[in-house]
Structures are given as C-alpha cells and as structure tokens.
Image (cartoon, rainbow, N blue to C red):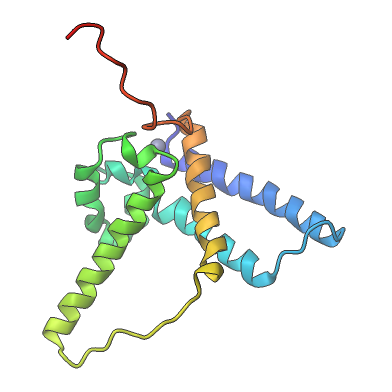
Length: 168
Ligand SMILES: [Zn+2]
C-alpha cells in the first residue's frame, strides 16, 4: 500500500493534470467553471489530501496526515482508535463523511468549552448556502477517492452483504 508521501504525490499530480485539462476546456469554451467554484474545489481537494486523509485511521501511531496537523495531531488519536485501518474510514461514501462528522464534533466541543470558560463568547453567525459548499465537498471527496483507488479499495467496499452461512 502506498505511503502517505506517495498518496500526496499521486493526488497533487492528478490535480495538476486535471486542472490543466479543466483550464484548457475552459479556454476552449467547452465548460464554464466560476473562479469561486474552482477555488472552493481546490481548497476541499487539498484539505482532503493533506489534513483529512483516510489514513487518519492510523492516527494512534505516526502517520503523515496526523503530522500535517502539527501539535493538534493528537486530536485524531481517538479517530484512529475508533476506526480500524482500511475499514469504514476507507469506504467511498461513508468514509469521508466520518472524518467530517468527527471534525464537526471537535469544533463543537471547542466552542462549547470556550462558551463555558467565557460566557460572553459568541458563535460567529456564518450563513453559507449548501449549494456553494458543493464544490468544496466534491474536491474533498475526489481527493479521498484518489487515495482509495491508489490503495486498491473498490467502491463497493463495506457495501457487500455478509456472505450467508452455509450451515446454521
Ligand atoms: Zn489508505
């Protein structure tokens, strides 16, 4: 299985090729991609590649995607303990969602503690439409899927029904 470094190289290389093709198609008026969509897709893709890699399921040890978090890397240790390597974390649809939910829980906990310690602390009122988040999410999922393809994980990973027992 490829190392974290190899995964990063595969993702960045694919992004460079895909980005060049997209730019070419845009110039040729075949597709129209707004700069906002291009930027949010790129952010989602690189966050997914470097910070939210499926290999965070190894965060109880030393893994490059945990190191990318610097001193905050320890935050992913429970995720690594919760998810077995190449289990649900490496499924195509649920896997990337588990890391988003985990991150949302951490952010909620941090805000909760801040409010407790500092009651006047206000949660910023940020309103974004879900549609504008779609390119961000797409970039994130595409980065995870490239990782899974490089790992040789099929899209039906964890979706197969358990084989029926021959005897009871
Ligand atoms: Zn992996």
